[in-house]
Length: 147
Image 1: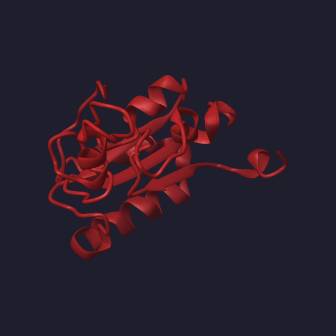
Image 2: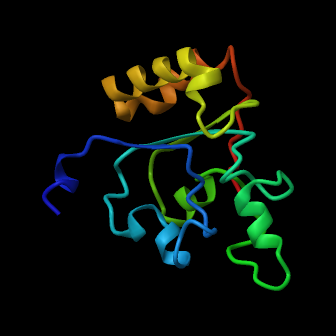
């Protein structure tokens, strides 16, 4: 589309990009339904205690619905972030930032860090790997394998 050519980056906040109660089918959970530019950088920020899209075992809404034996819906296991979707979509540049102890609205607990991440990403989306080292080394641990 004409919008796709104008994008320098994508920000996915408080969403896991997983097939769950919030999506109609597996394809709806794919980033851009696999139709977007693979070289457009993606930043995914999500709280580790997200009460809607948290991972399996977290008792999030997605977890509870997927585990219901009679009328369950969605994939299992759930990771609680977009890492697997980025890999499946063959995206060339992407970063998942798991905000420790953050809930669905991570601005309540991680406002300063998120503002800094967004400022850096919006300034230069293609430098996602470089700013990550300087910004996140004080707050996070790096995980190279997202699956």
